[in-house]
Length: 367
Image 1 (tube, helix red, strand yellow):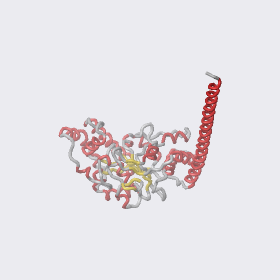
Image 2 (cartoon, one colour; image 1 turned 30 degrees about the vertical axis):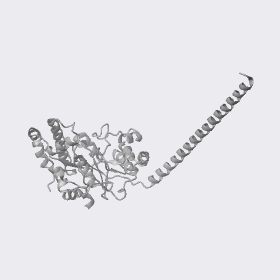
Image 3 (cartoon, helix red, strand yellow; image 1 turned 90 degrees about the horizontal axis):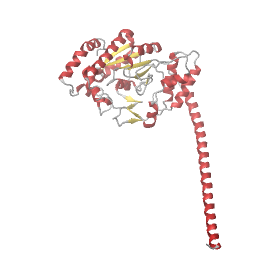
Image 4 (cartoon, one colour; image 1 turned 90 degrees about the vertical axis):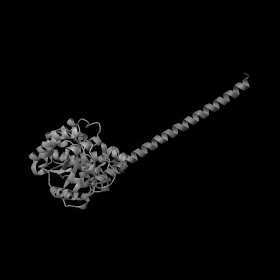
């Protein structure tokens, strides 16, 4: 290669190298600028969060009223009843299944007062709020109807810790008051936050089947209430099989589960007396007004027509999603569904549950 050609090639390479270096420097500057902007936005976001937390904290109302727990074995009724309480001006209705149980949802959480408040919050925190916050509230896995649910977990944690810092004497009740205050305070889309409340209502299946759970519950909430939904074992099994087809195939095992729940209902009624009431599911959907008038009196709240229609955060909601109801409001179609149990299964149910069911019916409220 002659010297002229070599020089030309060298000049071309130098120019290419300069362009590459210039490009890399430009990209570096862009990246550094983006990083600076992200940090700036992050810091501003933190300032915005701090402002939001401060504003919300200034308008927090302590939630110190007792809990009215809606109890039953898994199945229809519990969620429906809590949706009927939703929106009542004297009620904080917990908007979804109560999931403070630890280590499992059907265990009442044990709180060690010698532990740190951060750990108490970790035990009680219901992480499903993050999912609802992103996707909206959905009543069931097959339900396409969603509702807005704006909830800030970091704000809840701050409210909880600030509440615990403010109390002079730390008790189990104050820990639960702090949690309920933080929950309803961090639920920013709650349309029924203001006003003086007499009860929090919440539903969790199976929680009342364990005696130690209820002993802990009434230790914390001596003025608390239990509302049991009683359902005919035959109707319950049909419903349970529709909702959980793989779980309740063995009729003997399934009815023994129903029996265990019914016996726990009787034990709670005997132990806690007037703090407990039993309502038939069939009455709840067939005689809704009479049942809700009674329950309003049971909780010492004024009867309001809002108690007659299920809602989520005051939005009308389809009742009995587990039974594939398509209409809003209370529907009584579950009472008239086609029989899906064989004669042999009906005989097994009768044999196992008839005596317990008779005893339970003796304790239900008559309408």
